[in-house]
Image (tube, rainbow, N blue to C red; front, top):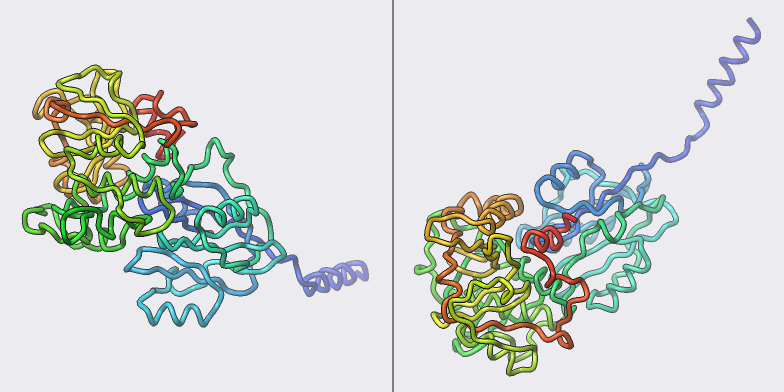
Amino acid sequence: MKKLVKLFITLFILCLIPTTVLASDVHRLYNRGTGEHLYTTDVFEKDTLSNGGWRYEGIGWVSADEGESVYRLYSPITHEHLYTKDQHETTVLQNNGWQLDNNGNALFYSNGTIPIYRLYHEGIKLHLLSTDATEYNHLKSNGWNDEGVALYAQGEGTPLPPEESDSNFEPGKRTVKNFLLASLLPMGETNYIWGGGWNEADDGAGPGAMHIGVMPEWKAFFDRQNASYDYNTTRYQINNGLDCSGFVGWAVYNTLNTTDNNLPGEVLGANRQARWYASKGYGSVQPLSDNRDTTNYKPGDIISMASGHVYIVLGTCSDGSIVVCHSSPPGVMITGLTFTKGGDSQARQLAHQYMQKYRPEYYRRYSNRMDREMDDYLHNIERFRWGDNFVGDPDGIRNLSAEQVLHNIFGED
């Protein structure tokens, strides 16, 4: 009996001893379309976003289950999330239209000895959190503003290995892959606007096409439209979207620059854009006409059509069809060229597959307006190709098929 009493007292005392603080994995995800990183401890949210097109990048860090509360806020204007434990910052942001996420509850806690750095990119209007000193120092030297140690973690994370993790768009990084990453940022969330990306004088690049990252106005305008969108009713609303030359000029600008408004920008008439880039020393130009030989078209090529359109090649398929990215009514999208009007091709199937997966709202509205015919897009054209000494191809993107390119740039490899 005495032994039982002694055991009970011992167990009771043990219950009074504080236990080690429990820990939660903070998962890190990346959105190819917006360039944003999102952090969550909710496995359901992580899985839902992963299945919805976000790239899962592993565990960012391990958070304690008690400490200073960290809140997640969301801006309906810039569509960005921000993480803070600063009550004053929270109040200021709420007064400026930001909304508390997670039903107003703490998302995780700041407690521990491992610093979590916060950085901000003025051009793309996004924050990023990281415990990785190498990533932190790299971003500081590539246009991100250092906001110092914002939070603390209890344990290190387990990010995916580099070959499995998504490689993010970096403003000013002069590679073919980065050019394609840039071109897909406004995909499926930006409508075609006649004159979009041009200045008010309509003789060159406007502020939108010399802006690092996606303009918030483009997505806000897109959100207000529906399946019956008609670009003829929105001509020269230059800040609400992009036309074909504005889009290509914006993608080129983001590949070559790290800051906004470096005049004169990269926008010219669509039918002259390819030869203009060559004249500026960016690469070479070659006239082509009615040429379906797929060896003439490589990922990253810019094609100017004499009829007044310009687009970017994403790759070719084994059946000879081509996948392109462009701004064409009703918006910025991936398109698979078909051999006949109303026909099919491997490129068309890929374009529909990726738009449906990564931009479901655009696909819901406009899937019946995505297809284009090969003969129209390869007739009387000029092909621009980047010079290796200006925009290189260390990733070997030009050697890949369209399917391989899409797998690669969407982080599915």
